[in-house]
Length: 441
Image (cartoon, rainbow, N blue to C red; front, side, top):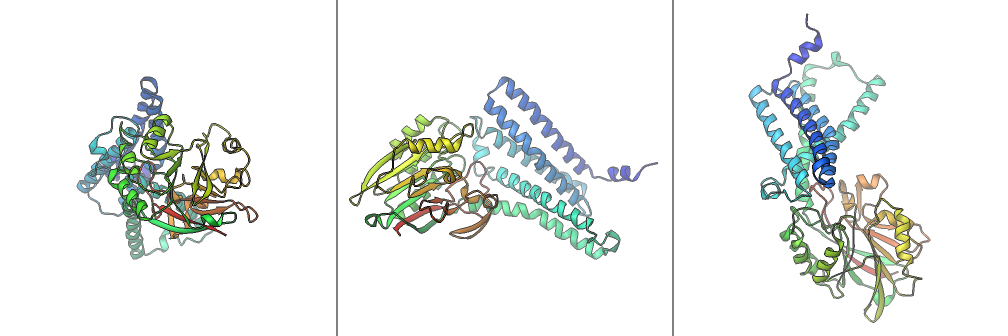
């Protein structure tokens, strides 16, 4: 005699069972690949595979939920179900191939070209949204049931059940639609003009215009065409200085960074381009420094520079991103303190990491410029100066002007950044070319 559970298992369509086997097989295969890579290949390759393995379980959980949801009363036939399963498996394989080859020289034009480059970003981000929705909805439903506020299945009409199934299926498809829109948002470069009053800024430099660029992340779809557009928009703003706050690179094929130097060589500013390094700029920092210098960008690695603007002296300092292996706050403070006591000259400080702002030496700059958080990356942009983002909700500086306390005159500006690392999945948060007009308060 078959139990209810056996009947339920037997009624599961073959395409659902095949999808489950595929997801289990992929995860096991990746684990084995990670073991092989750790023994016979580089640690970098092994770490990439390991990260993919860790991300596959929430990815698979989201897929299994989708399969179960569509299986219940969706009316999907065997033929259509198998086609869906094959297409999904092909997208899985493409996404994994893009992730595995993103830091190697095994990448192909097909994986990073216009035909397939969108598959990984859309596929991964949609499943991520479904997973986070599950993490939020399931506890709420359990609490709702525990409080006795659910009516029970017997009291729900057939019409209402059909409506809820249809609404749920539409809702399950929403993350894929949102992810598709995220690709367009990721390249919607915007020039955002702002005025920032600074308490001790000299009147001779009132109105100084600064373009703040960060996290360009050249590579993949961030190609010469898009970077040339960034250069064009920056030049049209007519600024005195262009200040970069790191993460120029995304690690890909040899020569992937050539478009960066070609585009930056086109940027024009009255008093030049200046930069610090971010966390993605240390694979070969000597080479990066040399190439940036050749295209007109002065790199400040824990260094302070002085220049004359409108007859006034101004200081521009830059600090390297401090590794997570060390006491980062102490590292930043040591780099800044090594420059000696502040003079009367106004100072701009380039620091990729905005979380360092809270622990910086008091009065070490008039304005700190940072990036790193990509404006929050995922959220709702309410205007040029305000947004609700995941990063902001977690308590990290995401975008805009920050001040430590009312009695501290030092301010920080965090840009939404130009690019992104890896997949173009800016959801609701567009990139930014920040043009800051500095005012004497």
